[in-house]
Length: 243
Picture 1 (tube, one colour):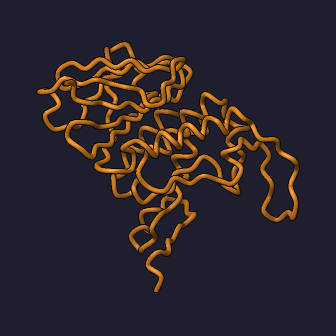
Picture 2 (spheres, rainbow, N blue to C red):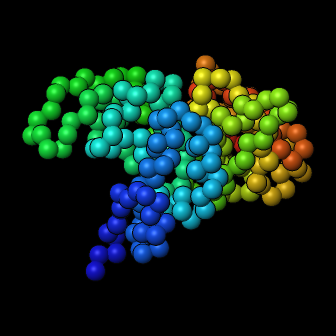
């Protein structure tokens, strides 16, 4: 017996939960991948909202693999950054493919014995270096995961459908929220933060990714927060109780 061995299934046709129930540690979440590359944020929201926390935690989240086109050839770097933060912020397996972190653009079939030259993209490798470093230092993957539900700020504004908010907490006086806008449209939403005694404390908010050109504005009022996200926002927000 090798208890450290993990079973990962590349499975489709809605059979992911079935294989998880049979003992697979992780299954590919191809549905989430398809919605991301189709630029369908409402579909991304629906996939995550309709999945149980247990299913999400037993899923492998990815942006490319040996069968799919290179993600750097499909998404702009702003889109890529937002999508990458999303898959890194979710519970489960963070599946990163060979060449993805350097910005490779040419997919080589596994049957070939050689590949075409593919120059590294410093902007993409730098992006991943920052994302991986900050996520490792954050509360992502530790403590309790909550998928927040973005609500409309008014009846004529449907941009809340563009937003994904992932909350992680492992201590009472601080928590992190990954806030992602999957579109090129400025987007706004309200979200009720799933924090005990949230309304009895004052909170400060810091963006751990310090992205000035894609800075997310947060206003806390009552038991919820308003998020204003610029196009393709990708922020990891640290909430702390104010001294």
